[in-house]
Picture 1: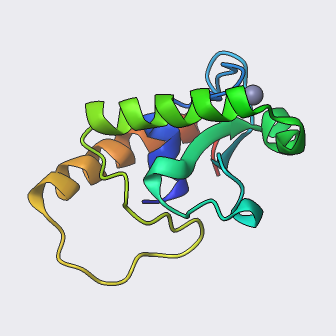
Picture 2: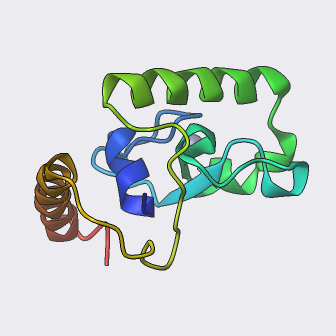
Length: 124
Ligand SMILES: [Zn+2]
């Protein structure tokens, strides 16, 4: 999954403070809920959308905030049929794999959302 998949799963809203790219013009980042430095994995179950401020303040994040974010991420992955072990590829394409029909449908949705997001000047 790419950064944009995570933004879309989280409805373009920071998982920590609720700031939205649409309503609040939040600058979004792909956030490792458990930081890589603390052996957080690079997979869907550990990735969340965070605004610039919350992403920058991750050192100050409480254990409770981390646990809440992880459980919300787990819930959304289930609801949206996202495999929690799916690898996160922030800046490069995943290795070549056969694309499933479900993935094709998701890709179409992503393209639509990306277009809308670009129209609002929130994603380049
Ligand atoms: Zn935030």
